[in-house]
Picture 1 (tube, rainbow, N blue to C red):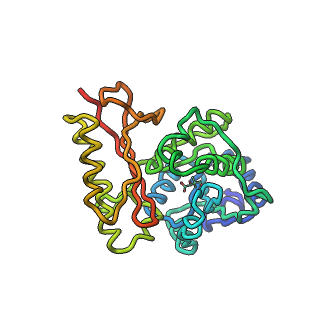
Picture 2 (cartoon, protein in one colour):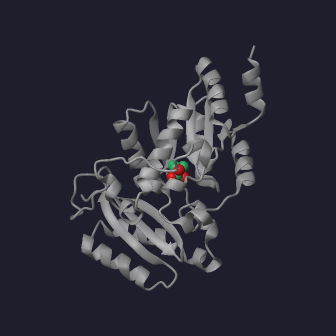
Picture 3 (cartoon, rainbow, N blue to C red):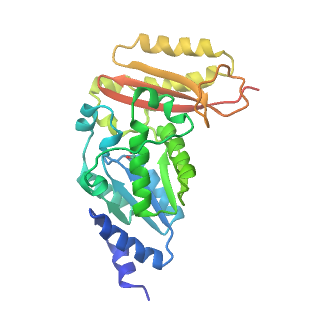
Length: 296
Ligand code: PAF
């Protein structure tokens, strides 16, 4: 016979705003030896997020998602103000995907009276790429992810590879802080024209949206070129593509080692390489990345 708690869970998606109510519910799951998968999000959900929920459902008894636009990871206050909010739609999508529990805390619930990040050190990977252009961003991400892990105590947590540097930072966070959770990276979800799915895409104008697939086209071509060309030739190719485009400003393009995220000086590395890109369409920042094949 199933418990009332299990019966209720099978029918409804539970929504919590209060962390104590959530932890009470989680302790019931733990008493029943349920394995918990966690998908942290900032809302404005798309198929990429839902693929993380699906992945969690495959490998856990309970899937918990959070929706929280974390103020401390925004270096630009305008970006925070304009971050899309589509809560009703998000809840419908989560329910239809079979998410069991959603946590939607307020800023006060998460930060009490001190909306500030802790200062972390992640062996230098926090200073590469996004770290150079978004001061304090990864301290903000790590602070909130650690707080969520402490509340939700998941067995597994799911992060998209679109934010590849974030994924590496979260893995380092878990290692350094000894957090008992497995971090699982999931593949990038793309629109039909190749644009990586992102909550920010919904802020693009029609013209910007039509221009944006160039980002992935350039990444794909760079990955192909890496078989025959050297780094300088690839960087020159990338710069040229964006110089010609009036709607997209290249912020950075870097080929780096996947683990250390250090930019490489040659493609003949024995380590796994990846190309990373950040582009501004007006005030909307888009990032993407692609794996670079090993040189034979
Ligand atoms: O990737 C995101 O949406 C956010 O950075 C995360 C992991 C939910 C932390 O706020």
